[in-house]
Structures are given as C-alpha cells and as structure tokens.
Image (cartoon, rainbow, N blue to C red; front, side):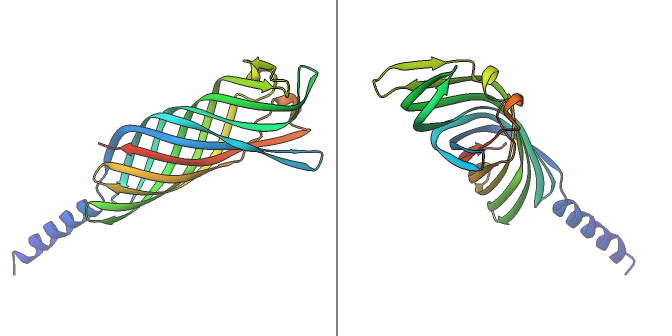
Length: 214
C-alpha cells in the first residue's frame, strides 16, 4: 500500500507528459495555388479569372499539446489574375484586350493547427492569417491585334505592396509527410492607397500544399 501512491504519481506524470508534450517541428513546403481577384467599383462587381502559381519555402511548428499547435514560416509566392476585357494603362485604352498579372511576394503565414491522431496517421485542421510583402509584379496586356505591352512596376502604380488573407485548410499527415487542401480568403483591399476610396479589390484562391515536418 505504501508503494501505491508513488506508483500512481509516476503513472499520472507519464500520462500528463505524453498528452501535453511540447515539441518543435521544421520542414520544407511547396504549394500549387490558383488565385483570382474580385473587384468592386461604383456598386459594380467583377471577378477576374484565376491563374496558376506556386509557393515554396519552409515552416516551423510548435505543438503545445499532442492535438493543438502553432505553425509559421516564410515562403516565396507567385500569384496573379487574368481578364479578357477593355483595360486601361497609363491613360491608354486597349479594347478587347487580354490582361495577365503576375505578383511575386514573400509570404508569412501564422496558423493554429488541430490534429485528430489515428496511430501514425492524423487529420489536420488549420486556420490563420497570411501576410504578404510585395517584391515585384508584372502585367502583360495583349490587344486584339496581338500587340503586347508589358508593365513591370504594378506595385508602384496600382497595387499595395502589403496584403493579408485568411487561410483555411484540411490536411492529412502520415508520420512527417503532410498533404493539405485549403482556401485563402482575401480580406485586405490590395489597390494602392490613392484608389482605396473608389475601388475595393481582394485576392483569393485555392491552394494544395505538400510539406514534410521533421
């Protein structure tokens, strides 16, 4: 009987440590993304077609307990949008033009991750903000006459270098390998400061990510 209390305490401590283990994880990640832009101006709404892009970089994660953790990192992201319409650049109108914009950013995600473990396999739910710092942007306008005009300073003329969206994801993990399907919901008006009172434009899109966490 006198040994029962220490044994019970030891088993309780081991159980607590197992259930509430704190652990860091690090690893590379690569994503396919497809983004579009929704524009609202003078009560008119326009949704421009999505274009394919990618994200590549690394994540760091910290598990507070076995089932809940935080994850952040830094990634290089290429996103964009495309439209077939009449467009105007530098006070020049191009009728029936095709416009394609590519944006290059550094992305800083911050997710809360919940895990449902099933042996070595787990189902992951993640959500949180993603912050973007614009590095460069390029817009190519092709007219109906196949004339092509390229502009490489879209962040200086039309768009804000800062952007933010909210990420939601559902993923599957086996040991360290993760496959996640998600959606990035645009919440920040990405047009340049001088246009924000007249135009509201938000970038959103789908993302598929493969990562390996050590």
